[in-house]
Length: 336
Image (tube, rainbow, N blue to C red; front, side, top):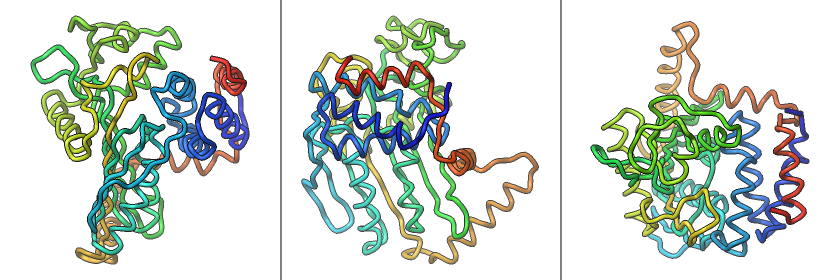
């Protein structure tokens, strides 16, 4: 690992994405969120994803020229078509739309269809907290979780995030996938040649495995919380796909190969204005009362605190594996 300038890392990621077909705006929006994930200590959703995105751009699984647009709307809700581009532009647009609609309607919902992977949802929600609102985000993904009692992956890892703005403090950020471990962690284990612990997933034949590669290639992951987590994954699947018309997770070819059609994933974002309910002052008071009760126990940390601390202490730099830095340099030159 070596310290690299956040600015230089961002520009390198931008160059790599553009070299494989992404427009300047798509590349810069994508790089912004990937680098933010690294800065916040979330390397599984950071620039390690650039190589995969470049691969998808190169074979048109992702459309580098796509421009997201609103294709249907009512006052409190809208649907954005990502045009099979990388997911960050459309999702950033969706968050902005959700906040704008919440300002006038009390609540805003923005769905995204024909999308791609969109990284750490909690980072995308930060503008909601900055507006003093509550935000929720959901996404599906290529199939990873088997139906309860089954052995075949049907639902995606289907991450869920929630953000709660605070008056004079960083927001509370809840951000998790509905699997025992993120697929990004499985990817890291494959990259490092490490086995995975018992209880993380099964191979394509429905047998428990410690081989990370066997999970990525046709295997499946266990849902967090067993039956309850599986039911949550089903609910997220419907929120992201039935409402937006996006591809269901079992209809999506693996995200970890360059073979197959565009992903056509779905995402949903909700912003809620406390002013439409008990009022902002009551909301902030209730949040801080709960925070005080939580922190009364020594050693307790609020969700999101680690992210905020790492970002605040980054000092313009972030640790990047030398192998990853070299890979990004090659990608920036248009190489695979």
